[in-house]
Length: 95
Image (cartoon, rainbow, N blue to C red; front, side):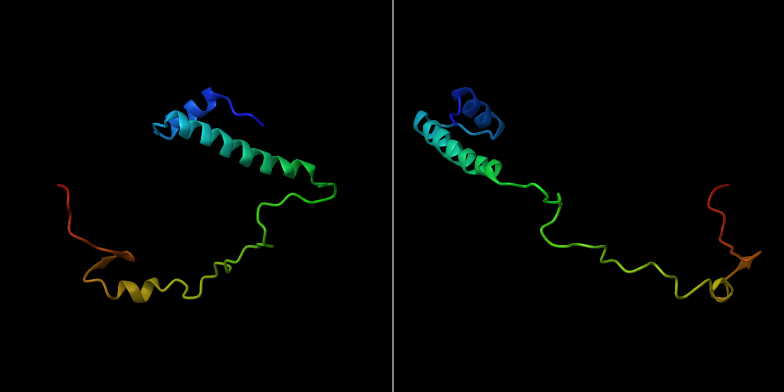
């Protein structure tokens, strides 16, 4: 596969690289080699192969969120300096 000079110039702009003419030619050769290598994947027979997002058989590894300590509101309110109707009573901050 041949890479156009404009493509190399555009990639240089995106990568913020200033390439000499020799470096551009080498980049074209390298890109062509990479694209030829990747194009070999099109030769593979993928009939009957399920698509996947991971190479490993990944499942949800998180535990279920189960509440174990429950609602201990009555004991927590006992620690408050002041309380009113089951809530913490705090000083007024706005007048």
